[in-house]
Image (tube, rainbow, N blue to C red; front, side, top):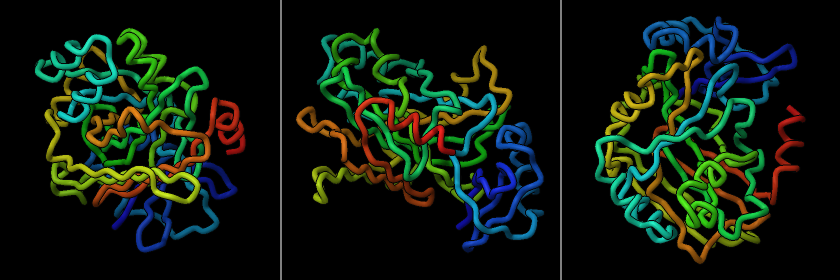
Length: 288
């Protein structure tokens, strides 16, 4: 199994291919530079990767003008959960059945956290949850170059109060975690047959475990990408998170100190610890 990664090795930040415990740099200046090429060109670059390097620290696989966007209400369980928490249940039922998907901005590249870094629950929200999702790493023309694990951390109480509060529920420092490792698209024969699992641990004990499969998606990934690219530009590529089907009950919200573990078959994993508010996340981002 190989992965595309963005890393720092003391000489600067580079992009490489991690395979068989060896990290080999690619001949590109950044992840954005990589995603301005076609998938065929990206594959050729991985086959010509340089000599192995050591002492690297893996970073989030986004830089430059890259953005993270997300799709909502793409699984039946998600539609049910959104209706449970909302004062306007019919909004989500209509989106689930509609041709046009729900798409929303999630994070700029510089705000994304990755494995081992903290995710945050909002200090002004009574109920916050992780949302494990398959993410698509997209080139500047909308080709799927790879797959990542995404945690779309969300405030259920804020969004549930009024759907117009969605940006505040979804977009804040520490709300978007993306796995450092990107599984190349050409190594995943069927992205719509991947098992997905999430666990929440609290004080060393498992307080939640859930699983799903991407075969349960109500929408084709290609259709989500097509709508995202309508009248929009992503010159350095983007990550599109495809929605969740693993949703804790309304009686189980995240608490500071919790650990969230997400795994997606053939793609990878994402482990995060939970903090309250943005300050600890800011310290982690500044320490890179």
